[in-house]
Amino acid sequence: MDQLNLHDNSGEEKPPGAGLSDISPNSSIKNDAPKGESFYTPLDPANDEIRVLILRPGSVKDPLEGRLSTVPLEKATTEMGFFALSYTWGEQTNQVEMTFEGHQILIGRNLAAALVSIRNEGEVAYILWVDALCINQKDTTEKMDQVQKMKRIYESAKAVIVWLGDEFDGIGDAFDWLKALPEYTDVANGYWDKQRNFKPIDLSSQVTDALCRLTAVPWWRRVWIIQEIVVCRTAVAFCGKNKIPFASFSNLSHVLQVVEATGIAYDAGSNFDRVIQSTKNSAVFEELRANWHCCTRLPEGIDLGFWLRLVSTRCLSTEPHDRIYALLGISSDDDRHAIKPDYTISKVQVYRRATIHIIQLEKSFDILQLGERLARDPAYPSWLPGWDQKALDSGPRLDIRIKSRTQLKFTLWTNSELSIMKVSGVYHSKLDTVASPFHWEGDGLALPTCLRHWYETLSKVVGSAIPDPYAESCGKEEAFAYTLTAGTFFPRITRSGRVSPGQACKAWLAAPDVEDIPSFGSENDLPHSIRQFRLQALGYLKGRTFCITESGYLCLAPRNARIGDIAVILGTHSAPVCLRPVDGHYEWIGSMYVHEAMKLLSDKSEALEEAVSFHPSVTEFEVH
Image (cartoon, rainbow, N blue to C red; front, side, top):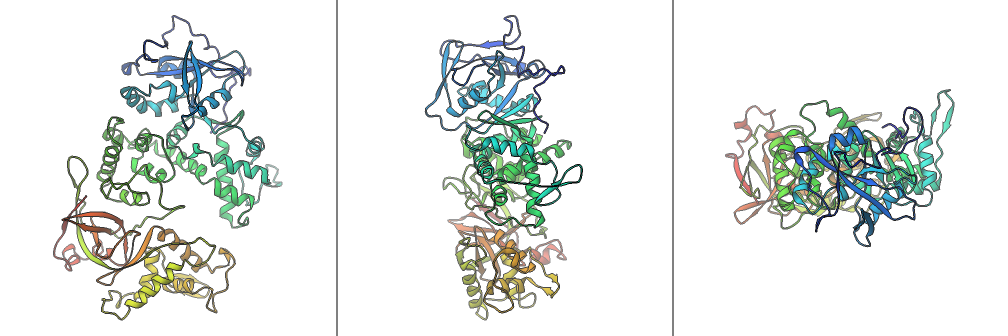
């Protein structure tokens, strides 16, 4: 993004709103003033009206004063050059008074701090769009209409002002460091300037502390900022009176990606390592903007399912409905036509509508696997993701996606309340053995204790009465290794020869107790094949447990799987599903990996009839 430019062609600095602080009484702009019990005059949707805040100038110690004016969005864009504020509402206790034409209202403390910091201290008013003030939050009809306009408002604004909170020690130095950061870096610990002189990148502890604190503020986890930043022309970030082009954060992400990817390691706990870890949320904006500006050229746009997959475990909202509504403006026409912002219905109704819509649009149940990372409300249907709930696991957890798809057709029936699903699939087998859920202390390279227990569980069934479906294929130990990585780790060719998943797994389970595996001090000390196996396994094991079916198949199932749950293969779903029989219907437990199960029904099979010969027919499962 370009730096915010507040200069006209003459080079003379003019604040936003210059020349508009005194709007003529004959102007088509209507002033909102207190009338009776209502502070707001109604907006005319047919005239595409919005309100803007005329923020009076003042010093830090002066009280906040302003007025609201109603104007068509096009006029606000072409004639006024308004700015849109992006901020968090925060706690609404200890509110601050703001005066509107002699009428006092209370506003949130964080909003008040933002307005005090960004207003002009000269003689000219700022013209802003601020959701808490420019939308009558008590008028549900108006709120629903204005929420649908918010994408257009933020992309029409001259710039977006990002409020990151009050000033704190070191933030000025941190902003100066960001401004001085090179726009391009081709080595991990420095860059080459235009004269090809090498310049090291210096990062002090003070700047590191300030950046870590800055990227931890709640703004970075607010769901509405996705739309506000993705669609805007340009943005400037404020922290107290300190300001910086928001593009500096994107540039920081580029630099850190190079630092992290080169392998010229900065030690764990170093300043660069701390900044890399703390900027994970801010770094995602580069990906978001890239996807948006790439896909806006596509007539169908970007689906709601894409945005939910990207932000569901990262972002929060004050209003539960907004976990969905905040993403509609940047979603496809199909999504916006199917889901309209409606704050009169419950959040559960919103989540049901959105989830069923995505399933039908994608002709797949894969979106439900995303919801399995989120805590579930017992009052929800078992299949419904709690889109407003916190993630169950810290850090990333990989979805199970098996390349071979079944020839089974996608089918879905729902009742009128969208609380019950009927889906068609093939019963595979019942869970006979369920180990303890995966738990990792996170102690460096220490092997998670539960994995040794899982391996012991596997050893107990070898030679038992449970069938061995892998006797003529890969064998149980190879199957166990494939299961730990959900089938994503394949044999590697190394200098020492071919390394199979089973060999890599066994070496990892044995380390550092066997002679041919060194005692590891850091991840870089691990042989490459073992390191890759370990990283892939840890990505899939979070939130899951090891199971064995009564047919001898090895599984990676959701952490809350039980003995007696069944594995079912659904049409077009990317993985088998664990269902729980309950009083004539089923509960959705979650997606699972069953080694070599999908290939029995994949399109590589000679014929569907032959593929399902081990089970008599496709079955309908009613899931509550």
